[in-house]
Length: 107
Image (tube, rainbow, N blue to C red):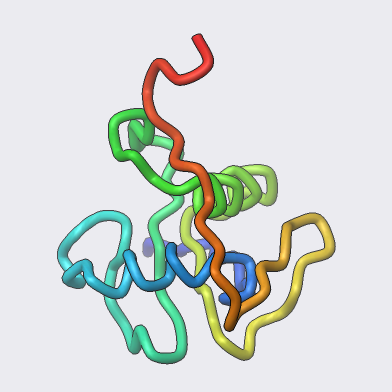
C-alpha cells in the first residue's frame, strides 16, 4: 500500500501571478497534478525532484520547502485551506509578482 502525506495550505500562500501561471498548466505537467484549479491545486513536493531547472516562483518553492520540513510529499492548495503562520500570505486582488528562482542565481 502506498500512502501519501499531504500538506493542506491556503491558496493565499501563493501570489495571484503564481496561481495564474499554475492554472495554465495541464494536469499532466509538473508541478500540478490536476484537480479543480478554481478552488485549489494538488502539487508534487517530492524531494526526489530536481527543482533547480524548473524556474518555479519563490512563493511556490517556499511552500515546497515547508512541505519537506513537515515530511510531506504533496501540497493541497485549497481556497478554503488553513493559513500557516510560518508562511507568507499574499494579498489577492492586488498586483504581486514574486521573484523566480533560477539555477545559478546569487552564485
